[in-house]
Length: 278
Image (cartoon, rainbow, N blue to C red; front, side, top):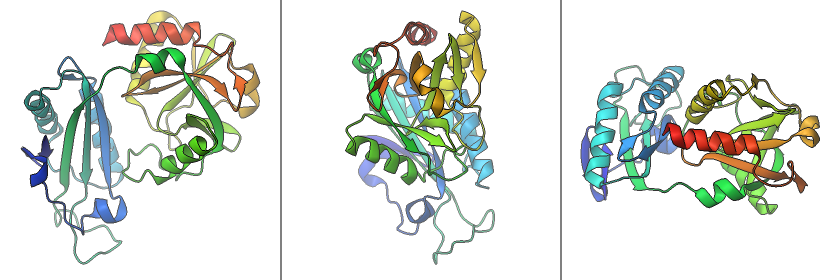
């Protein structure tokens, strides 16, 4: 297996990450997960823009221009022969010794970039069947708009949901839904779509960008507004969006059926439109 390590594509076993890499010690870094269709990165420009924005928010200078990073990702896909799959890309602040909580001065540390590409097919069965979820308090930090390597809060939420016998967690903060454990969250109420507005409480999703566009093209009413957990009983449809799974229905929450407990018509319409857009 070949991977991208800084500017070079090398065999995976050639990669050497120092024990004092700040990503390893602090989670001091950012990442992107990019879907690949037909040997091409999907919405790559949007991913690079979000990567750049996340880097700025944590005062991390990208090691290379986004255009060069993007070109190297496409090269990796070609070398690995990936038709349909996904890329995991991460950039850490780099190695600073001795260990120190303070950000190193700009230019004194070289960031470390790694990426790997793997095959992955559309999860069609899950897109049709949907998931069962539970509501869990959102106890993550207040910079969820940064695609940070520090994902322990997300993992703990998902683990709690799984331990309770559910597929995923729907996170709520102060009585309002924010997102799921690793996805943006959408509701249909009285025929209108709702999703949490972008900001520090949610990740600005790449698939969310495309679904916004599709709502406009399809004439669907969309309100970017937080939904109260008290309205859950009135929800007609619910679904998740992320770059890997695309659009996944939520068919029940804490044992309560959403709609008739099956994928709803608006969810189905958006799934079809999303696949057509690809």
